[in-house]
Length: 220
Image 1 (cartoon, rainbow, N blue to C red):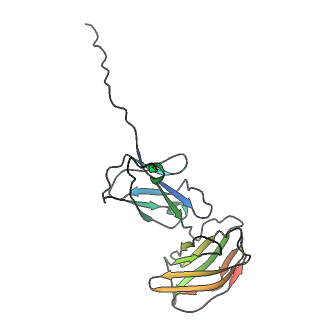
Image 2 (image 1 turned 60 degrees about the vertical axis):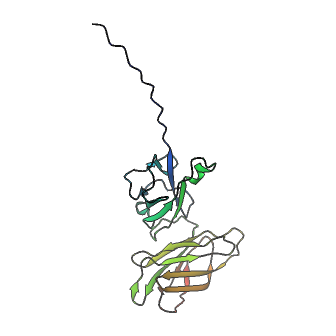
Image 3 (image 1 turned 180 degrees about the horizontal axis):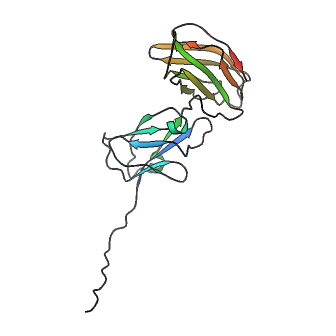
C-alpha cells in the first residue's frame, strides 16, 4: 500500500497583539517592581504575562466588558505596597501612531510603613488618629519647594504612615513643607515643617484629624 501524501495547509500566521501593559513603579526608587505585583482585568479571565522588563502584559484581549474601557485591578500588596488599585484603561485605535506608548498603563505604588527605605531617603513618618481611634486609609501628602507635583501615601490599619519625598536638587535646605492629612470630611494641614533632605523624620505624637495639635519632628 502506498503511503498517503503529506498534507500541507497554508494557515495564516498567528501574531499576538499586546492590548495592555501595566507598569508597576516603585515611587521611592523609580524602578519597575518585578515581583509581588498581580494584575487582572475585571470581567475577563485572561492572565497577565510578566515580560523581561517587569511589565504585566495582556495580549489579544476581547472587547472591554465595560466599553470603551477596561477596568484593571492591580494588587501590589505582595511587594510591600498599598493596594489593590483599580484604574480605567481605554485602548488606543489600531491606526494611532502612538499606539505602542498608549498601551502602557503606569502606576506609582505607595509604600507601606514597613517598606525598606534605602539609606539617604527623605521620609516623613507619623500616626493618624481621630480622637482616641487610629485611622486607616488616611491620605497623606506634601509638595516640597520646586517639585512639580505632590508626593502622597496612605495610613495603614494601625494609623501609621511613611511618606517618601524626593526633593528637587535646587530646593533650599532645610525645606519648609506643609503636610496634608485627609480622611472623609476631616482635613488637617500642618504648615512650615522643616525637612532635611536625606533624613528620616518622625512626628513625636499622633496627629489628631479632629483636633488641632501640631507635633514636632525628631530626625535621624
